[in-house]
Length: 148
Image 1 (cartoon, helix red, strand yellow):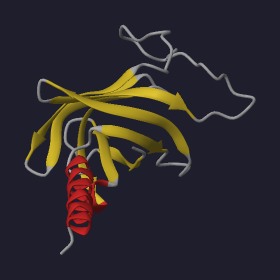
Image 2: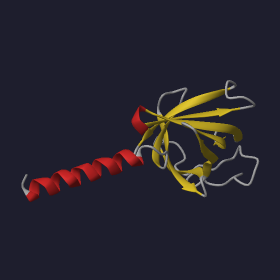
Image 3: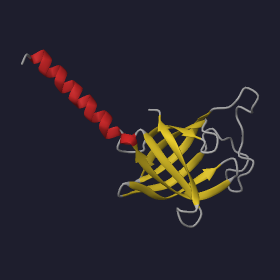
């Protein structure tokens, strides 16, 4: 095999491996999809710090007649009346087998904080995020789509 072809194949293999490795973790940017309307709501960037995941809102998908920089008026904690853009809405998720558990998620529309868990689906292209009270069977799930 010629050296140029060999180098090209090696580069392709390395890039493919890197892309695959990135999709085995929820770290990245996700488009949240409203479980009631099916419409995109926001872009959330998930990062990892000290083994725990957190997610902040980077962008909101709002209609032209809606407030483009809304605040969390329903929140009752330190996020009360703070802008949604830049707000941490997911925190404390830690890897537990094939899931990420033990975290919390904020529903900014209701101002409520729920226990949460998340599971990667479709080769890391979708993230099933569940918020619940008490046990996971008492909650709602959303499926977020990987953006980057």
